[in-house]
Image (cartoon, rainbow, N blue to C red):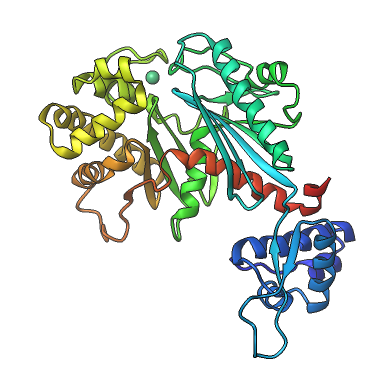
Length: 410
Ligand SMILES: [Zn+2]
């Protein structure tokens, strides 16, 4: 990524006051160190277009605030004066993502660069239609994560609560979701009541757009992407020109409720024949004879078993998945025609089965389009497994903090 100082042009245009320019240039230095690792002042100057003098002054500010630190390289002997390398540190702060999915609550604490410090997970037992006991588990995991953060001598610089359900309103709440039988739930309010140490500016975000953003980072040269995942239900996100499309009501990407089957089975959303009714985890697990394991072992264990059986060619699982994959491919065909993405990324348990969906999708795409190979949308497996949303939350927090590095020290 090309990072260039905008100070000269901004000052010339009089559009930024000097404080804004300095903040922007501090951000450029911090961002350079994040993307390139430990670097000398002259490397930063060459890489960013800032002058050597500016880099020296900006580095002094960041060193002072303990956002970066400096160290001599180990292998510089005998080759003149060793370079002093700067690297991103901020050892006094941490980023927290607290994720609720249909099975468990996970607390994930990282450094400012996104390096994991701690992970705590606890099953909530899926009490359908009862948010209170789920909030109890969330608050317990949050409390233990905050204790650990304190024991590590770090202050929380950013916290995001990631949920499996759509979020809306101001302050934001979970709108509703069929996976846990929830109506509107004030997750942040419930947590704050139980754990008063929760930062007042904690954010509440749905998992799919965060997961999509994280997967996008891993795809080369891709700006237009559709992300679909299945674990507790079917969710997704649309990314156009590198930005998540939220929609007028923040409901864009609700692909599980694309109605595919005319006069199909009733869906929890009130429509009939939604994708989730024919390709959702419950439908596929029951068709594969894994209903009893779903009840006894939980969703994750049942989906792991299903995927293993499909990949091993077990006939009942294969037939169940084959039926679902046909509907998924059809949904992808509609989405590809509507949005024309470069890539469709499949996450959740669909990631391990992405090849079979890609084949079905290729079979039903229009073969007579001119230049069809060049214009094809590729269907690929997500690479981040179950961690995509957690990593997306941490990486976006990191990017936010590095926009104004001195705020990290406040
Ligand atoms: Zn529906």
